[in-house]
Image 1 (cartoon, rainbow, N blue to C red):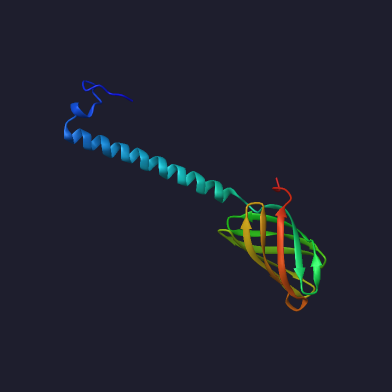
Image 2: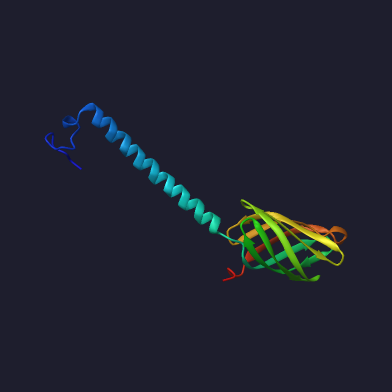
Length: 145
């Protein structure tokens, strides 16, 4: 905007006290806009959920498989089901930021997965006790809606 020297918004026509108040007001508006933007972006990230169907590829010391997991996320807690080489089982776990860990009982042992979530993909390491250790990766098949 181009203000003329006689304009009421021109810096020349405002007393110093009003200029300070105007500057503070502008700073407050900028800060509020930044705060709302950050809050909205973090809200979007928090709405990203692992809830849904996931296809995994697992490489263990005893062999490989492609199990399917169905997760339901509530806050940082997850629950769901495993369906794969070792049958089916109930899954429980936790999410902390982009980190995930979950476990389930199969053939008398606890299988534990730990890893990192990156949107609609995740990967990490797994431990099936006496059945072996390995790595896994997966992608979301759908959003569970």
